[in-house]
Amino acid sequence: MQRDHFTTTPPRCELCGEVIGVYEPLINVHTDGVHKSSRAADPGLSVGASGSLYHAACYERAPGDDALVDS
Image (cartoon, rainbow, N blue to C red; front, top):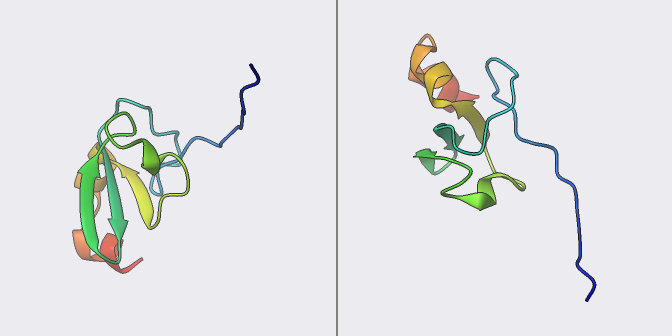
């Protein structure tokens, strides 16, 4: 049995640039709003997520949510 394998680049936080781990809470900011999840809970975020991804901690420390939503 042959399996299809593909490699994806792990998503990185838009603020700190570090890889967002599978079980780390993350924030996905997109045109529809702000969504809090993790890559484990929402595997689609790992492959071609729309919008910007942030570590939840980075997003919370950012100087104002409006700056993130507009980017």
